[in-house]
Image (cartoon, rainbow, N blue to C red; front, side):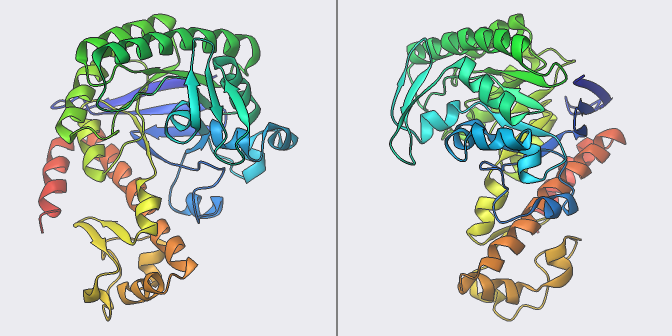
Length: 371
């Protein structure tokens, strides 16, 4: 059965470590989950993810439902077998993609009616349908369907969205209890925009439904960084301490450090791989843009302190050449490094919390990035 155990707590902040027990293995927290939207973390094989230290990945209900479809994935007894990934998988509900990608989406109490971005076909994503797809994918952790809202938005719109999200959450749980593998988990999503009164209301409603864990959605959608942190700081304590706390769609290395300090356990973001494809590499001293002319003859690895495959074998000059030539290898090597960096950062955070040194770690993190 799915479980979450807290193993250490920082005395100076709300940072903590823990272990998620899933059907496909243990996951130490705080954890970063690379995004494998279409059943692949872009440009990387599952074997390369393992070599980077990845413990859990994220898949997407909306995209996998449209292509290749459950009729295909069901033949492989789920997404694990289909993509040859033996570790845990968390799947998003599809709500954010309906909001951000689908054309002519219409939201009602029943669900989200949308037009496919692939072929224009019409579909209805209800809470029950989202659960049905995620059961087909055999997600270790599934997410309830929620209504995402833009930033900024009116208080009234945010209030309606959180009420609908709670209603959908009840329907998701009912379907999940009747149909899903009881060893897998279902997380509820807290909405409410940047309105703290609505965040408190949404948290109360979702906690009353009682899920295996809780996510805070609707952050990092264009709001100022200080507002994102303020909203997270307010909302995270509203989630019961024994439950895993997941911040969706976040974020930069700085975001991860700050949000861990506020008590968050789980994160996902496309940033490492998307920025890799745009030539940005994350290092202990900050980011570098490999297209910069200063790296044309640079014989150093991207990050001297990094042990990833890319840094052990290739120079900045070679990576710049690949990137400027738009060679596909550039995207793979850059992605390997960035994923390795994010996974390593979370490992260092866990070690610091466990050893009672997180406050010092946080100071050193920012000091090194000013070099």
